[in-house]
Image (tube, rainbow over all chains, first blue to last red; front, top):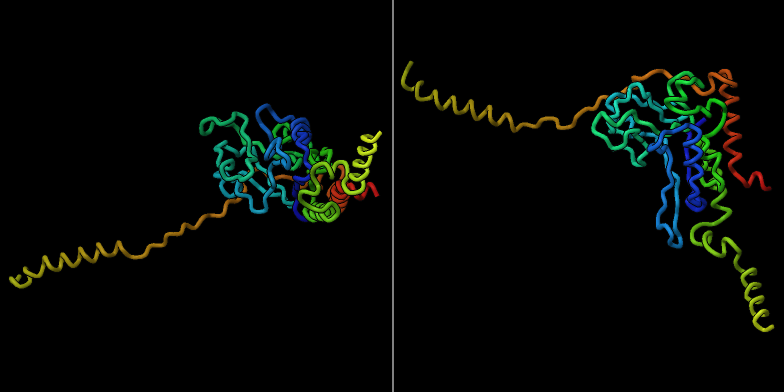
Length: 212
Length: 78
């Protein structure tokens, strides 16, 4: 097994926020903490793009490098996790993370008053007994131990968000791109209702309707 | 002590001070050597250790791979 990764296909994401809702519900994440969120660029403008963002479980994670208490660890399958009992809520990981993944229950409070850091666990729980109440309370459910993938990806209605072993994820995405093409041709009227012959038929229909 | 030696004393002191002052201009290593952090928290079990897989890593990997492949809808619609 290689490394566990997320991949969000911006051509498919419809900003439904199903992934955000699934994550919040599965782990009973408290109010104000969002382990996952959907970012939209050029909202409302033709060609807008959305992408679902959470911890990307970096191969060389900057949060691990800056943590003064060394509370981060990486599992054998490449998931970046942390021990909340060691976390002092300093917020260094938040400043280091390029994705804004680390979340703090008390929001942007003073140093030491932010509370224990919380982030996406790739549904892999944390350093407590697998499936225990303590693990659920601190880190949420451990789906990986049940042989399941993160719920956000499994719930995604358009399969924009995919998760799993990096090689499998890359294979799925490669096949998808080769089949659908890229860029503007996969967006807009033609992509939704068909171009070419269908467009001609519609034109002829309208012409006939105009003549009659 | 001769007058000649007394005359040379301030000169020697000045040379000594200049030597000390110039010593501050020497190259000092500027790069900090960071200590590689090591995880200090509680030990975690591996996902295939407990539950239904009971330590069978191959079975866990197979289950997860199948699940991941299921995300490819081209496999399902054909």
